[in-house]
Length: 70
Ligand SMILES: [Zn+2]
Image 1 (cartoon, helix red, strand yellow):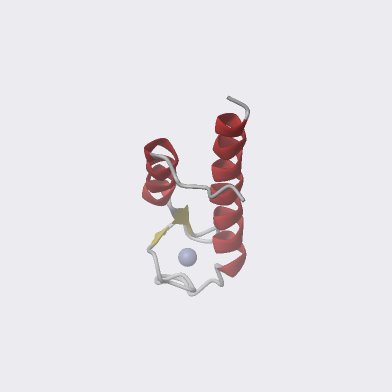
Image 2: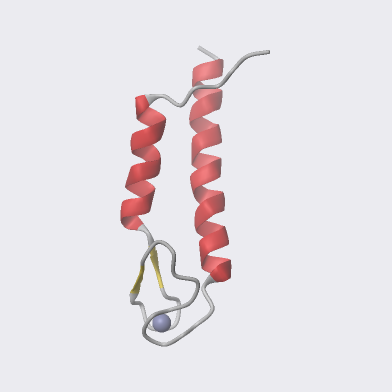
């Protein structure tokens, strides 16, 4: 069974995503890692976090596919 090891490219991809991070959909304040609601207005950001995680995951899978087809 093939073991998938993250490449430097994939890791920098994730780091870039984390740097862009998430902004509150209500007030636009930047959400920091570990927050589960907005520190300014208290909006529930779970959906935003999930969407962000999905984006990172899809991005990662896309690069895995690229490398697998090489
Ligand atoms: Zn907010």
